[in-house]
Length: 314
Ligand code: TXA
Ligand code: MG
Image (cartoon, rainbow, N blue to C red):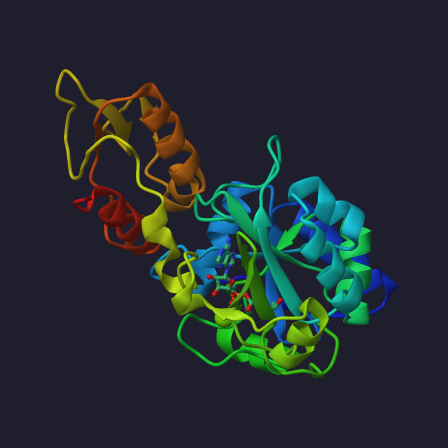
């Protein structure tokens, strides 16, 4: 993938092109008030997989879903009273709420890394708002930088890091906040600070009327460790070339399974299918055998996730 990255203006024509590209499953970086986000249609698994590929992320961290308004957010998540108060006070703005997904949502499981919760926010930047309204759907967006590099606060930063790896960047000038959003989760009656960020935690504490629980004191694990939460019920055997009689097989490439991640050996397609296929095989019951996945491109992240699924449990 070495098409030049288009630099789009933040005017009506530029935003129309950006929304069109998102619809086509392409990656578009756009300004938010915190940092530039690397956006993809959160319902298209291959588009979401392409985010990880473009960033060179070695693992699937859950991504934040950006929406235009509260009624769109309510389509995707359950809405406890405290979340409604936080949203009323601080949205649009640099606040992400981690909330339980509603049944029947159409988000790709890759967005949530297979979790039953999702981080969601309404950004305040006028360009982000205009793009989300024009697109009319949920946009998954991590910061628009290569993995391990500094978050971008200008379109030039985005181009410097991701030129040729994404379809376009909407140039909306420098970001005002320059720090990622504050992430809040809910652990029974506690409000948990999962990541300090652009919205000062004192402001949140003032509104909720109690001190925030830090994520290390909570049952909600810190974001980097979240992935170990989901493991299939049955044992997982990796690098299998065929299934034992009691196993269900997850295939890849020439090794055909009960379900196959990508018959053509395409790692983007495989990543898009990974969590959904694991859930479906797990629902059948019994151990799961997994074909070898090459350690190249998205194969690193896929193998990272599979190694966690196969790790011994207690
Ligand atoms: O300001 C921001 O939040 C920027 C802009 C683009 O909106 N986005 C951003 O996304 O910082 P990202 O992917 O770099 O950070 C997402 C963070 C990760 O630490 C992830 O683990 C956490 O959100 N997260 C997302 N969903 C979660 C969930 N269901 N449970 C716990 N943590 C979650
Ligand atoms: Mg980031």
